[in-house]
Length: 275
Image (cartoon, rainbow, N blue to C red; front, side, top):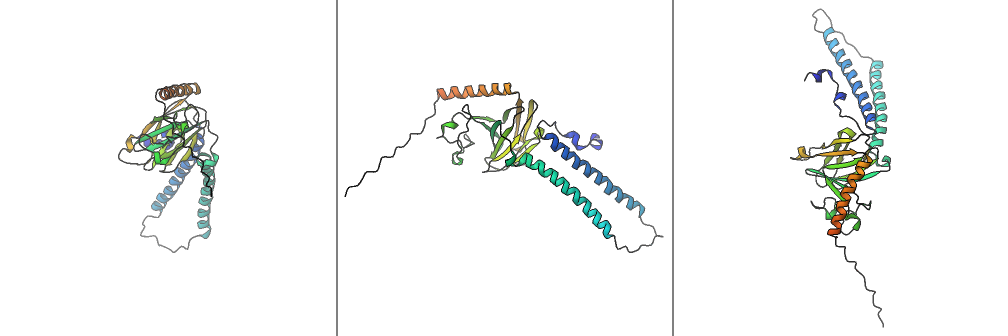
């Protein structure tokens, strides 16, 4: 426990492995150390004044009107600091959160949170996501994949495990089946609430292979503790190999159990009426 007395918070961060994790950490470090300096400065002055102006029966009190210049100064300086930090953080916020700044995806996946786990959807071998129909959402069809859309027959769905290639722009389309969850990838500095009925885009680019934690950072119910998944960042060769194995199994299953396509309805031409 003694290490908490001399270590700062930054040493407890997990390793950052996304392209923007360092910029976020640098911004956090500046705000953190600025807060530390202000804390010791203000409390140092407070303790000094308590000691200097402690009770003394021989000291006479006097009325002091204050200083407008001093009041103006300690209002202006913090305002300038907060405005600069706000502008800096606004740029980082839009870069990482705003949909209009999401880069072109090299890999797209959909994530559907639920009590208590994560469903992950990849487009099938055709590279196209099947259409979604919310009225068709069930525990066995969490994404509401339209059963009448052939593009969705070969989509790949996994649970609590995401496989992704390194050095690629990954775009995650996030939603939830029930309550609010929070998609949290500590190593990638990604945290985004998932809202029922909405799809929210997240992006990141991981540059280091390995297994990383996927957690829910929102208290979502009695089983919240069990919402732990895994993210496997792999080389492009390893990722393609994993994907090919999954796609081969899907193709074999479709050949053995071909889905029934809806029968198209043909409208008969209206008969002409003769008068």
